[in-house]
Length: 70
Image (cartoon, helix red, strand yellow):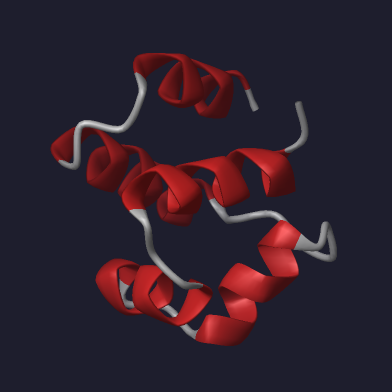
């Protein structure tokens, strides 16, 4: 599963729009949009913050595991 699909599934599970998700992560909407569309991938720091956020929000462990593999 690609990074963009993982982000979409996480957002779907949390019932958040791209804008809401970006606000929660303190990044821009366009960054989330580029991640989901495969135009860019997060930096290591952004990935760490994303993983911490997902763990704190009780995101499905399978999605977290997929995210950690990337």
